[in-house]
Image (tube, rainbow, N blue to C red; front, top):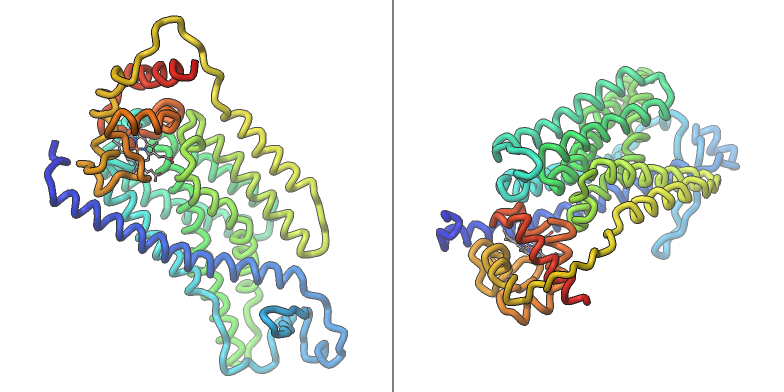
Length: 403
Ligand code: HEC
């Protein structure tokens, strides 16, 4: 196997690990800055109260708020339209979003596009080539934006609920298609990356340019085009609701039970809906309306998924269960190329899981069973070609030990 061609491959894998570590770290930092500032402004906007001071009203202030943080008192004021004179220094919030997208794109390239045969292609899902998988991934990011942008233009005057229902159906359709083309984890990440690309696209193509036009018009002493304000409001309203769904997609890769299910698209659809309901609860709460039916519905949906995905009870078989010695050859050929002290396919044993001695196999029995039988998440991308019969053998061994 050319994968055993060392140390070139090993060095590559090691560098990919470092690239992924640094990019993921960066992506988290800037993503926190973006979503954090976005949450702050949503909360601020929803919490403003009309000013009591007539002088403020005369200045055109439509809402204000008092807050204390880190030992200081803050008094943000929002103008109904804009202040009569623009200040010399105006803070813009855009690099939080751009850097999140750039680092995210670099990360998905490192983890998925450069290792498409391992992480994107799953022969048991669809017989596609790594290049096709990458094209599907990139096409999803771009196509997702085009469809969303078109919907926004068409539905600019319609209710947000109608927009939400149509866009949600679109996302579910994408999830359905991707889970029938790519590996489960790649499908979930790409649904998240598609929504996140759309959010950054909103900031980059509409919100910031719209604000620039408003400021430029004011500097020329003209009235700004109200359409810029309407569009920016529509798009940032959407971004607000998309934050929690995106964050779920981003962490989903650590929870194989979600994306390995045969109906993973439905699992994702229900969880994303629950995320939107939770966000809605907070949006209303900032405005002083506490509507528990939304989080209650979200919890009911999540509980429903939990019950639905619960592992089936084991069927006891009368035949003598295989012993550790029977399954060791399976583990040696299918798992230890990665899970050993000196693995041949990875720079170091992934997740620190070592399966290279009988004692270590015994110690990891439950996790071996979970990953290779229950979730079928291992061997990763089934790169070592485990067969169903071998998975059955591991299952029988594990279940035999339980009795
Ligand atoms: C191509 C390399 C590769 C092979 C082969 C492989 N694994 Fe893994 N394994 C990984 C990687 C990478 C991770 C970390 C996954 C992650 O971060 O989501 C992992 C994680 C695990 C974990 C920890 C998962 C967790 O979240 O607790 C277990 C257990 C595991 N593998 C078992 C197995 C078993 C059993 C086999 C053989 C049937 C196997 N692996 C074959 C690469 C591999």
